[in-house]
Picture 1 (cartoon, rainbow, N blue to C red):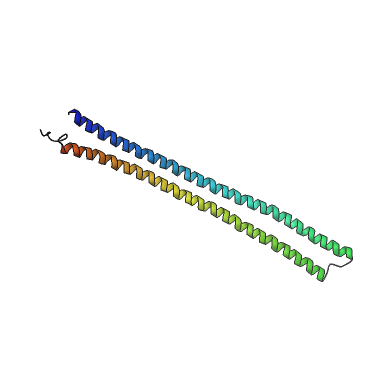
Picture 2 (tube, rainbow, N blue to C red):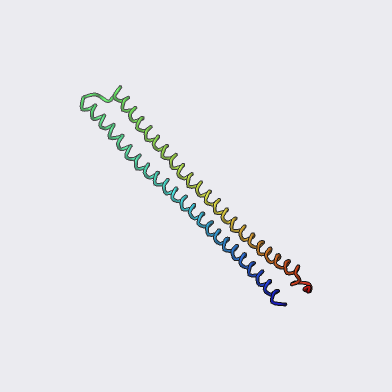
Length: 177
């Protein structure tokens, strides 16, 4: 083969190799982005779970304090009645019962609100995790597409060079002239 034929072959191979290398690098970068997106999403979901657990502990502590305060409030009221000589029956007893019911209702309402808040925090974490996994999948698809695209492009470059060389007589047939 003459030098021009070798030049055409070398040029086609180098161009194809460069295109293939670029596709591989794009695929690796997409895989790294995919891994990062998924890791970030898992981390954020764990943070949300920790935040929800902290909310539960805070509410538990607050409930304990609220029950203690309610008992003290009722004891203070009972002591006030006793000090003034009023017996705790009839209206005073009804008042204390209503106060205990109100205190319990307030505690249960705060517990329900806290529970709902925890659900929202966890739901947000799970939604973020799903979005992160979706983004990771999209990055992986982009990487695969880059790899496949570079393979087709490299093949096209080689074929185009081969067709050009064949048309000019460098490959497969005798060179005219």
